[in-house]
Image (cartoon, rainbow, N blue to C red; front, side):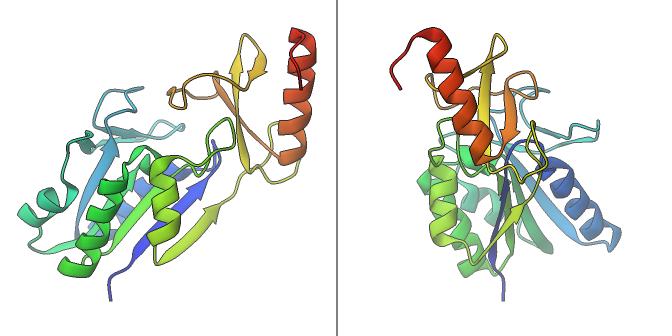
Length: 199
């Protein structure tokens, strides 16, 4: 039976390298995969999955109006798996389309993404993947400041953590640090005190 998998982690947890590895493993066995990534992530260019270690690959970009079910249905012959990178940027309707791919077409789907944003709020795509996925797995990485597990993403601006702004701002190590809970709240408190903001 096909299943919908959601693999999430903080920044730097190896999500993109993992999706590229999964695609390679399928294709090494002559099994066809279909790769998608959010059109929001344009760091390399739209429609490219790229890892921090330099590996990259083209993928079908997901726009707000993209119907994932229709895209997969048109290419479903001999398709072994659907892989989705940057799944936190999906909309509710995209996640529902992924469930139809699994349930109606019997094709497994693996979605990789962040769970929470820099304010420690769920992204829309992550929220519905957490609600609807058959299997959920955390990909671990360590805190930028200590050896504990990173479970949050801290947005940086001018070398200081920030807690306000648009939910979506694409960036890498220059803009986000993976951090543990302790360092997230401690850094936010110190940053607000420096700016004279109320806690």
